[in-house]
Length: 303
Image: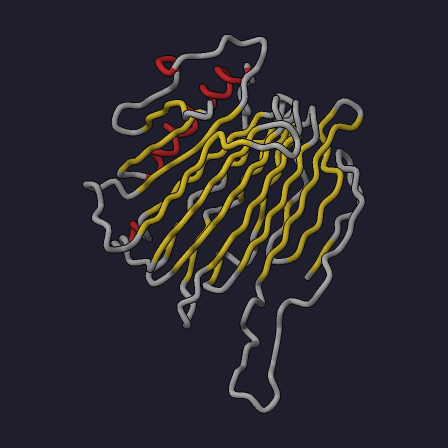
């Protein structure tokens, strides 16, 4: 179902709808029954800007199963949006398309309401996700989805591209579980792949600031009992703060490590045997980097 939201306080909306069908097809006289192919292609396009001195969601396009609930302004002035998938997970063959544009001066935080549970397809197709961000000079976008949990036999492939103008600020963290650990299911999925590319430069002339490609196959051996992994990247500085050195970056021995890429971005990696332990360390590191790089106050997110 396609949906466009009416205007609400804090949101200036110019809704538009995607064209085309949900991807159903049936060939007459053929053994090919493709009714299930691409029946869950979620689309989410969000455009943020500043109106009346406050960040607002100006335009949005939503196609189930992807949707957002009403934005919330945090005490620090950042506009927080939750991405929701009411189906409870993604199936092999599902595809998600996410596009986010942030104008100069806007401050945006995007979270997901719950973990992404990847379930297998009977024919072995992977679930795929294509995420593209554009952030103008003076804008800030932070994207911190909840954990991805691949079920036994599932396959997942994601590409995430962020194109940033000079002077834009961007943060991304993502976490991965080795499976449904609480039930004893570890590394039983078929494959997991996540490719991240961050470009920084004048409009139309981007240059790579950070690139990361993570691929996990079930044949890989676990490192001890570290069933939970995290990765992230932070880009941009603030004129009012001194440029921190690598020694200033947050770190938690045995949990979180950080450093700087050749392109000037700050990278983050983490691993832990328990998910909550990694989550706490990751939150602490995120807030420390926000303060060091951008001079930003705490987000104070309340779920």
